[in-house]
Length: 136
Image 1 (cartoon, one colour):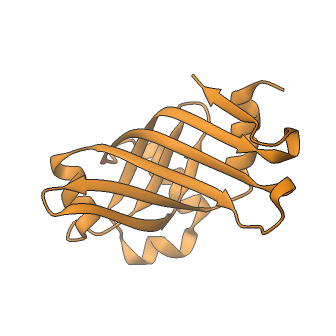
Image 2 (image 1 turned 45 degrees about the vertical axis):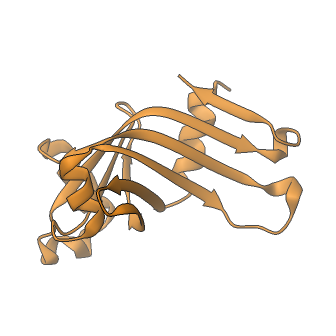
């Protein structure tokens, strides 16, 4: 199995990522529900424009993120580090993907955002202690 295929498989087993942004007032980290488009390596999430992390993104779109499997068993540790750029979502196909994944969100009429992935690093101790898969 190729690294991107393993990474996509890991992403498909989860639905929340931690998003880290940086602005004049320092670092902000939040958790967001996501839908993932594997063909384009894009995450879609909802967030209000008034939040600190979105205010940061509007000035500095470069972000870091992670998804993890929470476990105390060292041999089962899995976690994905992500680097990319965020922007307000425009693509209608990605909007459909988000609302298909989270249909109840449609009633809230949220502002949707897109994280375009530039880098993945998956740590998977099930493949050997500290084993890393990197894309690209």
